[in-house]
Amino acid sequence: MWSIDMSTDDLSKDQIIDIRKTLGKFVKQAKTQAKHETCLICGQKLPFCNSHTVPKFCLKSIADNGKVKLFNALVGTELLSVDSGINNAGTFHIICCQCDNTIFQDYENPKAYSNIPSCKLLNQIALKNVIRDIYKHEAELEMIKNVKKKTHEYEADFFTTIMMDIYFESQIRARSRDIEECYNIFYAAKNNLSDLSPSLHIVSFDQLNYIVPIAFQGMIALITGLNGEVINNQYDYNPDYSVEYLHLAIFPLENSSVIIMFSDDKSSRTLTFENELKNMSIINRLEIINRIIFWYAEDYFLSPQLPKEISSELRQAAQQMQDLVSINPEKTLKNAVKDYDLRRDTCLPNLLSQEYAISNS
Image (tube, rainbow, N blue to C red; front, side):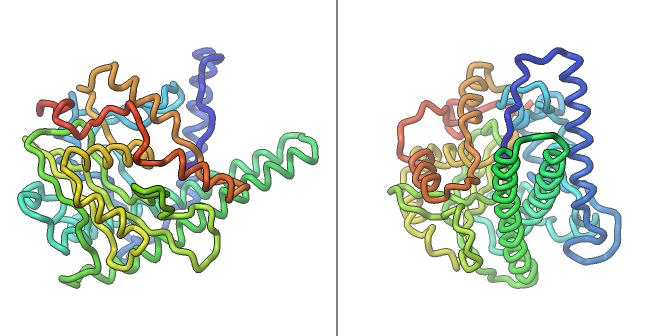
């Protein structure tokens, strides 16, 4: 995650409006610079589709008056949008409408989750996850490069300039590695589209008889497991080092919910964590998955039905998320393992428990 201070306490309304406009232009410029000329899947120059990160039927289940809350609502800033209509929530533009409507039709059918998902369905989820991350990371990379250029327009002493360059180069290096990793996963998932037995396996599949107030779909790179072991060293820039991801989907349905975690058969560092998660009671497993979401993810969507006091508790957790890129890798990895210890005590509300179930409005 690439983070900046978004506090607006000392800003006037006019200043906030101006900054919003500037940020909007900045983000738009980065997305334009990162835009592909052709569909990432078929390679044809066709109109891009308004693809959803999470199936639209999931967003409908938690929406209120057609809107869902975004991660930004927990950050507590007036500079970013805090909610979105379900038509535009978590959308991206990198594949054509034909590919989006045909390749992902199985997993975007809510009836598909009455039983344990097939390998074909898991591969569709994995492919959508990695395409979304490619879109996200490529735009982030362009944004970081643009910020670096902007800093050189301001006068600063030699030491400050050098330190800022080192920081931005570490950010660029990290994001470039993310993109390379994502393309490796993308090509494997794309090749598996016609394979009935892709190299994926389910870690856990939980069916809940209530609607959870959160929707999420994405890839998670755990830093540490349940015993303090290092799963992914985010600061190892050796080209031979590969990040191992877990795929996670939290899908609220019409009157129920499903939570799916799966992994690549080639992953080895996640195996201990996977086995321990499988053997947990469903209550404990949901607690761990809930922590993973709020400690590692940003692209989740919340129901506006959540009580304000719960949103306040979640805001505190969101604001504690740290930037995982550093110019002091050894020290930061040690700190990250401690900060992301899934066993430590926390007052984080478990939105996956029945206590926070919502009604379908």
